[in-house]
Image 1: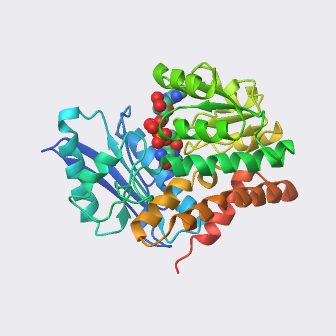
Image 2: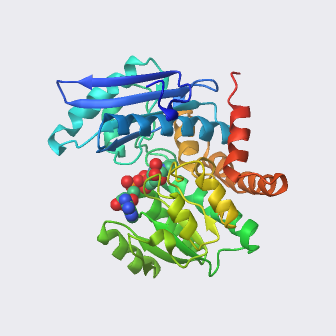
Length: 345
Ligand code: NAD
């Protein structure tokens, strides 16, 4: 494990193996420098345990950077549950996962990520208080996706202004890859701002829904990233901008919700050489964790959360300006700023 490139000095990595329920999970605590390590739990079917571990390590490091950049009082962590999970076993699996989170005594705080919903977190909450993203009566709590989507839309506005000099998204062509929790809300946000949408998802029903609701153009799963669009918004899984894709894409901007969009760090240089502006993923997709953190800590009003999400726009504009001025990659500028904030209080 210590030789895995994604390891990057994690504070703690826990393998969870619960033969009674069949739970196999990895909980990665990257940093608790700013506070407890906060980050969601992903349920995915990996090729093998090594792939699951790499995903957990990359995602947890990303959470440290994301929480630091968003000025949240949290470190970074992430959990992955290795699927598949049979529906009849789901409650038991999340019960066992809740016990594992509890055993960490508050070093790690969990919430939803890909493949995990509010109902799963309600099960986890029966075992531990170190959980967020729960259903509540008020306006804050539960599914973080609408907040993530709003932050991404605001970030796309900042990127379009920086790269294309346009003050609004009216008529801007935006290709959205992945129409799940975030992608669906993002289409709604972008449509409301006058953007023209091109959409793709492996689930045709979601595509049809976006076509019906927002007049979106149907794209192909195979080449949505190469669409004739101004902006590509990846909202499915990570590692999708490969060197080959980066060489062939024709859009001016890459700005979306997916974590770890660049398959290897070198892809950032390819995008920059080709004049494609990349909005660092963990900066633009922080809206969800902002809402989840507020829910966890309690006492933050909706207006306060909205203000923190609005701040994603100027934060990205600053990163874009620094990158241009200092002739650096946007990802490098963001990493430098995030690392400087990852200091023990
Ligand atoms: P989700 O599982 O609800 O949606 C993902 C969607 O992508 C699904 O509809 C799936 O069918 C689709 N998809 C998968 N592979 C695809 C492919 N090759 N082409 C097209 N579509 C494909 O997940 P989500 O919660 O919407 O999250 C999406 C991304 O955003 C993830 O990378 C996640 O880590 C990231 N993210 C989510 C949040 C949040 O608040 N949910 C916050 C930050 C980052």
